[in-house]
Image 1 (cartoon, rainbow, N blue to C red):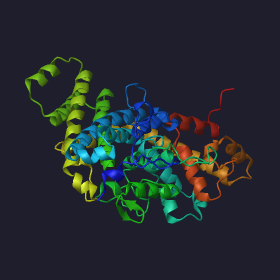
Image 2 (image 1 turned 180 degrees about the horizontal axis):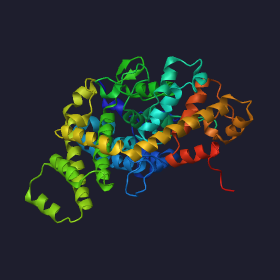
Image 3 (image 1 turned 90 degrees about the horizontal axis):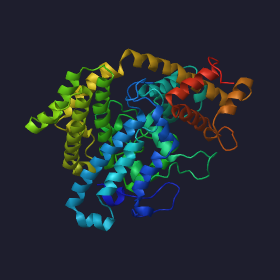
Image 4 (image 1 turned 180 degrees about the vertical axis):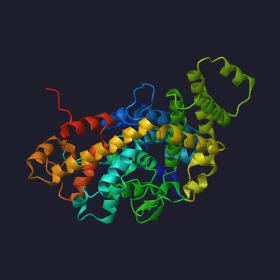
Length: 454
């Protein structure tokens, strides 16, 4: 059975241990500091130019990964506060002794939500497929020689969640001798990790929500093991654990935001009719009061009507999700629960219908697919060029390419890492960290399609 005494740990990578959360300077708790560290990081800023629904959108009201992450954090903050209040209400003396209050639940979930997409590559989830496909291709096979099965799986099943964990926990030796990443608390890193397992065995068809993907590369397995030991997460197998309970809350906040807000974006883009979005939002709200009808009728703009419904819909889903989480809390703490919270809410079937419509009308729209196809060419081209620059040191062309690889993706002294896997995973993270437009522009330059301005 997991305990909140262990699950709330303010210990940080690269810092000496702190047994209990303590108030930070200027009234900030250790967990509130996590939020600040994420939001001021370069990796978070890059999300402003990464795909959420539509790659390279021409409309300024369409969400990017940055705005999605901030909105998910707001929803996660509300969810965390509600479940924290309820849990503490049942054992007030226990949490008083621990020095933990509802703001700590709120802060951990908010920070984890803020970081949840930080490892996503360019071009959305198709970017993960593009990187995976490259490492399955004949071009990549010479680079994979001598790698273990798990190391190969890290690359051929490339996962944005694992890339995110690396960004949060890894510091290049070219930058610092201390490997601490962003120096987040172990609690926030635990809540961030939706898939606390290695890439193998592949369990994408599992009935358990936490097993369908993986959450850390082999390069970070010892870091993750250290976190699990500190938090005393329940272990399933040699390289798989049960989730930190607040990871379920973080996931639910993400599910609510991308389902509901992407659906709203679909209407704003003209790809979904007003009646469809209005009807499904109203089914979730399920409110026939005269006050609700009067307020809705006083709004004249269809865009504002949908915005009004979206806000009430999210509030309803937050309450329903909190009920599911607290209702299954004992099973969650004992490792007996492993489902998406949103699926078990009274609105779960409607949410599934929203997701189905979004998949057909938004994510598979022709212009989206065309840019995703281009993304496969761009990402595979970048990976191949950069890897050849690292491994083919005698080529004049690739010596020049090696010169433009950022220091943090090479060993100290701008040399390759001593093993193939470290070199490859570092280059894969270089490409995955790029924004959509930066990846396209860099690809054009190194292929001679366009030249830098003189």
